[in-house]
Length: 247
Image 1 (spheres, rainbow, N blue to C red):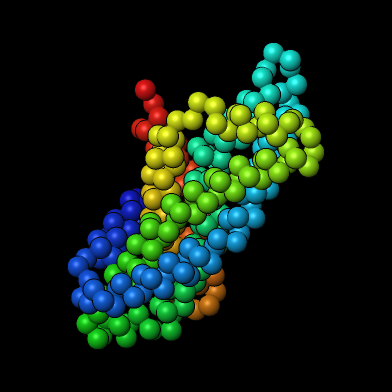
Image 2: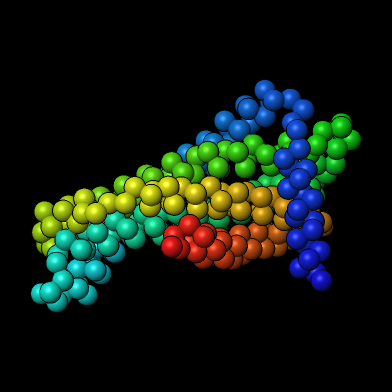
């Protein structure tokens, strides 16, 4: 019953978030600010993690596929499809759930316990929409670009690993990168990213918005936000994969 109660509260909260904004210009300015805050500021960690993951995936594939019957170019293909199908969308989503999600939950939670949200409500402002909608729109806009960047950087990290370690020849790796590319995989990754961006912003905002108490409760809300966002991302990853890729 508690789960159903929380789901109901979340649904009502999301409806308030997506109600018609009072002042479009203020929302647009806030959305642009959130793009920089939630997306651009996350670029460095996405690039660093992606380049190392691309290198690790390539080296692990090279050292485990030692059979002479397995073409070496399949290592490049494996690195490309792993980054495209799974890492750059799902794993980056989990990373952002920790970085961005905790930030959103703590920011809105602090506003709640310091009664700033109550002040907005007294002024007749839809606080849920004013505080959360720009974050949702910003994340759903910028996160697909982070996914694309992560994919290319990860592939580059794999190529760099082949150059530095000679696990396979860079020529074989590059051939595998170009071998039987399916453009729909990029569409699949972007669809997942947009869904995950919605989860990464609305779930932490929900926990922060309904925080009660003081600083300790803000910390607890932030922790719950990260855990619940991560679980939902993993669950929806399975669901979306079945819905989109199943034939």
